[in-house]
Length: 380
Image (cartoon, rainbow, N blue to C red; front, side, top):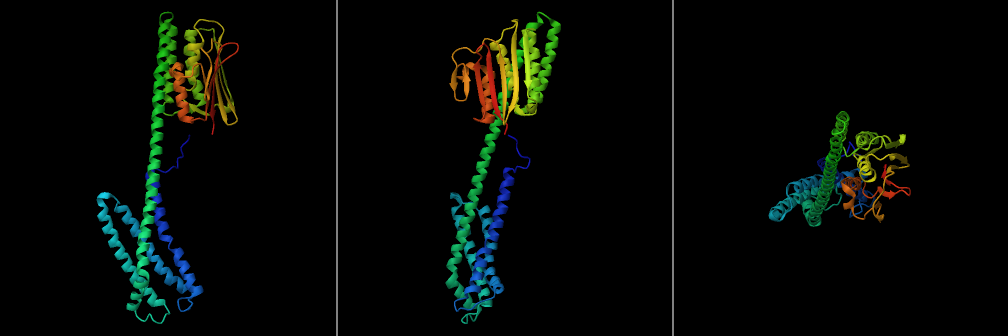
């Protein structure tokens, strides 16, 4: 839910992987160079001559570390010369030429090292050493070039796959945030129209009270705009929104409406989706209670139970219509969301986008009358 401030961008991650790849390709040649040096030092050469470990490391290490340089050249060619159908012949020509240059330089360099350090008697001249390397090592150098090229492309394809995968995840997250914003924008005019309707009805009966109610609507809009920048807000801020909305509702429902707000002190700073409770309270007023009737009550409670936040909105009104049906983790009066109205449908959609299947949304009737809505949210 909370993004790390140290998270890398897609470009940063790609650049870091390129640096790690180059370092890995430069250092990996220490392994065969060390093994070859140990082999000469322990087992000797073809004539059984043993060499000191230091000399063997200079000789064999120097021969193998040439590929530390060539691997960087190959990685640069992979970056610059893309493998594609329209550039296939260019790609082949570049790497054939690079193979000739690489293997030619390696043959001359290895021959010089052999001429300098080898104790085999028949290597009496540098020209003979070059001939022996051409006969014994040229094919291996060619194969090694193309093996390094294949490994470089394998790493490149992995990097591109990770970039595409990361880009797809980021695009999906941006789409989800856009959808959440759209759902919040759908709720804002919804509750605003209902609140203004209440004020409009009051204008014909008590202009002064209607003015006070309009001021509360202004305060409610101010709070909603303050929370519009984030998909989640602290619970205490959500309770403020509910309290202001209920003050406006009392204008229409009168003093016979009793409201209890019970909030666990351990839960006041927990982040919850913005405008989560207000649609539930509005649904209770609109479908469960009736203006002007005495002894009507709404209870809004928030309790932290272990790693779960339990939110409850219940009333003592007429309850749900129809038969209760079970649909997954959701109990509703009807199996389809079409009958639940904008507020409840919107609430469930946002909860699904934010929590997947880790939340619970329950609606039920009280035995003595009224409706109870319970939402359970994970706190991890």
